[in-house]
Image (cartoon, rainbow, N blue to C red):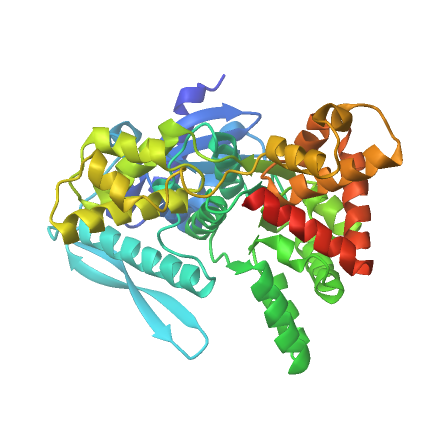
Length: 495
């Protein structure tokens, strides 16, 4: 019976015998270790994405053949997984008892790159070097630089920003689940969760997670192509393509990718032609087993004027949300910003800023920048007084926070009703209609789901809320006086 712990070592030994250049092979293979073997599927952990890419590109078929011979079955699989914590101790056990002939000269790969207008081709040739030359480390570094440059070039052409990676994402309770799902999607694209739909308020990290997925796919999937685009840019690009009779090129661009990332998909709502085109693009990618990632400010079923067939497809994978950061996460974000900017500010003042600024991460980072700028330009020490001055227009004492309770109170007073009337089961027109107005205004002004709104109005379900919203919108389109009444209520709630 095979010893599972020795399987990877036996596979490595078998492949090594067929390799001419043991120096390159050994330098890579010691950065690996076996994780498990189950149902003839071998899982191997590697130190970096570069090592993983190199093993897949150059040695995978040889490893599969050796594993098949070792296990006496043609049905085998090998998966290389990048280590969570990066570097680990070199695994020299894999080279135990390996014969290591040292001829006077060794052959080493030399990469020659030919560049054309629309292509890049690489040719591998062999050149000889003295056996005592220390070329292994230099060659590995050169290969890694080539790999990183190629990934960076594909990321830029796909619309990705270098700062939006998993490494720079700060995790807390409010985004932990969305982060975990995103990491899984990046490791197993079009496998576990497809499509992935991320929703949440402005500046909470949706775009960051989406682009981090794209970066990881580019690093780990050979010759992969990723495109990131916002919903309104997709719309504008499609309109230009129609006007210039270039729709075929437009379709080829968005359908010949390994991952399509569309930010703020809600901007397509109400655009029939755009939704029609995206519906077919979505179907093509999904059926071709390509990853789709979408973001919005609300879940699919709450996007107004979004076609039902698109809502259904957006929900067929997994839908996750990101909530505003709690105090602990806001402090962690500010600490990271401080470390990256190398600015001097005490932990106590970091906590003070975090307590004053709630809401989006962008707003929080903006507050930090403003405090630093205020201190430097006023030549003053950062303390509570300075922070109060610098953030006087940003703290929670500024704009009024609109809640369901506030909206309900204003609408009830306007129609001379009580809040308990709105929560009751009464359906008389003098109560039901103002209740629909209140629910419409809550959905328009408050960052809350339809489920939450329905619960606050006597436990009504989301379909009741959506039906009422549709009725109010239809009346506003047809009746200018009614629209003015709603706008007057909005002004009163905000003032």
